[in-house]
Length: 233
Image 1: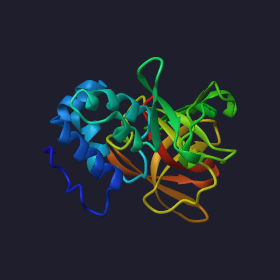
Image 2 (image 1 turned 30 degrees about the vertical axis):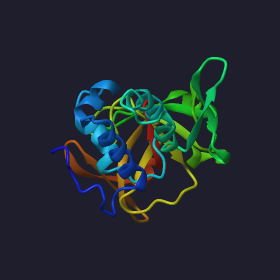
Image 3 (image 1 turned 45 degrees about the vertical axis):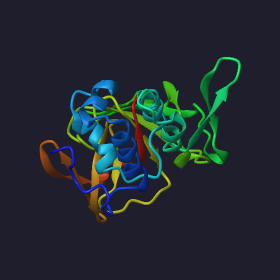
């Protein structure tokens, strides 16, 4: 896909995505240059955040990595961090920028990482749901006591979710056709898929690589929980 990709002003992307693109252009950077700075193997991995990103805020970790790059080109770090819902403050003694919470959007590293879910069918969860570590809690999960995160293994959901990313999950949010979800099977395995539909007997899911629909019997599924965000791990 070319750098222009989808029309960024279209209804499928957020104002945050459009603003990110405007800041990159203002900085005089190509998508390929930004992707190299982030250590991404392909520019399309970064392009997702400009042309297909629909959430209100960028992942905090992504904004923190972009801010110094854009600042070198004259774009204030504050403007980049604002895309993640955070407002940097200048540390007078050190002369550097440090993060300060923007109102109720402060993040804490208290989101349990329950394990790793494959893009394909060989995913798993650690220790029957016992967390091995904790990740930054995004604003969308503030106050959600049973929220959790999992790492992505495999590539069957690229370019939406890339190997090594972490996805944020809200088990309380209802499933809707086209949303993305972590599916925990009764044998302890887990997978990340796009939810299509369900009835009393079956659940229909979709993966991207290779593109296909998967049909699971309800008896195989322990729970399906909706993904509400993602971040670089």
